[in-house]
Image 1 (cartoon, rainbow, N blue to C red):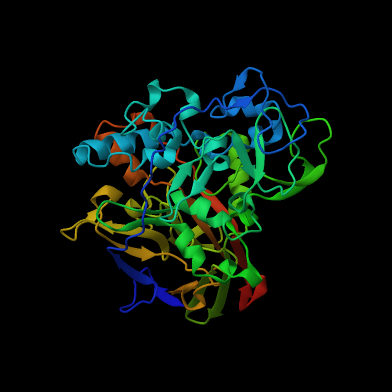
Image 2: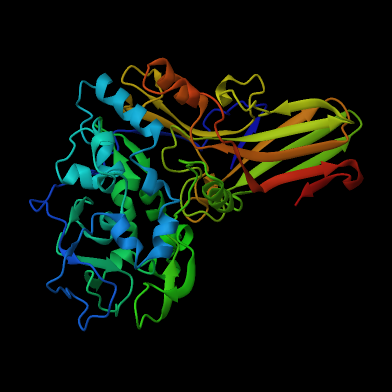
Length: 462
């Protein structure tokens, strides 16, 4: 547990983890085959499931729209995901453009191989700078990217291109649209499924620094053990029951939600925002303790990452900002605040500095802070470790002594997937339109929202 007071990090704090030159392979191999039109139209029955091909017009399995007819629910859910939006997100486009320019092109396909893997593998792009001119089916993380790949020994993805779509169903119903086969990589009950996600959610930059490590964080927890297995899909793809496809004879099976929400908001549509809020709501918990005294009041808040199977927050943590907002009132007057950040300002620029700021700070080879991962050679992590892997560092407590009496104290954790310091840098460099420098979504982790009032006396909530 790390204890802070008034925002000061104690010397030797266990949650301040330095990382340098942690290499994890992120290589991608482009297969020789480039033809994707290998399956056939039709959602009708077929007697075999491993390549039921007939002399009919070919279906382009690279195009998610071709999947929509038979898998409408899956398609609709996927269309709300960041996977669908990965290559069209203006912030990604701007960041990739800046990275290519600042590295003289040596960034290469580092970003695009995960944001538009089909385009990279087909040779349609080498650096992602021409994505807007490419067909929509080559942009984003599409059906074929997950359902038509194998994971190589080095952790990279290889596109199979054999007309067979893999899935978690051990006895798939045959169809004339494509061959069907079971794969443990698509089965959330199988530990292999984490390797599929890990191909993009564990990444190392050109300096050997692991800049995204969600899958590696998970591997250190009890959730990765066979006896207590809880894979990525168990949390990010909720289960329901129904027919996997709109085909005659399809029986009810276990279905998995394909919106796969995390913290990122691409379109920021109402439906997408709701899914992300629902995912964030129970992510971490908090305890608010208030002890009134004759000379004031002692306030302490403890945050706990007890349920998540990776660090919190996770992913591109150098862009993320999660912080504790703590406010004390005397009547209607605010007598103390920390983390009370205005909607249009960066957390790090706010005069109301948060007692707890969860993020990762990157540094270049000169030891200077940098916002962008292509410049980073080391990192300082201020994150909540998962209790399932590192209970010593899964909690963090902030305490403050107020010299006056108060009537009410509120606390909650606020989250931004990306903050204004990053956005403003992209706008200043001319890579992002100024219109994006306002209105960034700020979400609340509902389980951390607590309120103390004087009628409770000395108390810890909940």
